[in-house]
Length: 119
Image: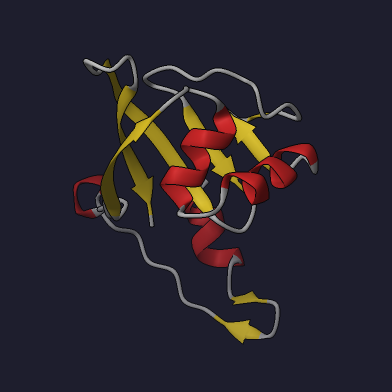
């Protein structure tokens, strides 16, 4: 199959390209750039955590949830009251992706959340 690609792949659309075989050990996948965030929230609702992670107002995030622009673990959610847990991934169309790393309860019964935002 490699020989086929080397012979047949000469252009992509109007742009001429050249292909060459490299060992698998030379193939490197860059690590995604991330930003670690921490926030103290009153609840673990998707609109609260996503608004903290993407630095938007909670009402704007709730509107995006209702519009179907927010996905939790790659499934679209349409209710802002969906509860999240550690390990969940929030994706917002046009904004990016956010992973909930850890959730701890504070003395005042709030939630200290550590998130990783992929930038």
